Image (cartoon, rainbow, N blue to C red):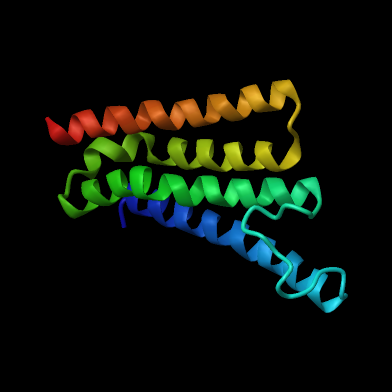
Length: 134
């Protein structure tokens, strides 16, 4: 598998990890009768701030998957991973950093760092798009 393939798999696995974490906590809340099984909203409103951030971090991954994952997939399917391989693991690292920062804090510095991690991904996405179209 190419580096891009590993990065794409890592991206999907990270989104899955966040989903499993959220659903594990939700299951605990149901089993301990702290929340009714039908008492959850997609954004986890009404739950702890951490659970709300976890829902957003997961949603951020799912929202980015068609764009960034799509670019990695296009490179893989067209045998042009030489374009994406050099930055693919940096992309994955920026994505994971964005999520972790989101989970840890909403302080002004954390929000700025989270945006920086996302901006890195956007720059890579624009670059990959341009190179794949050329």
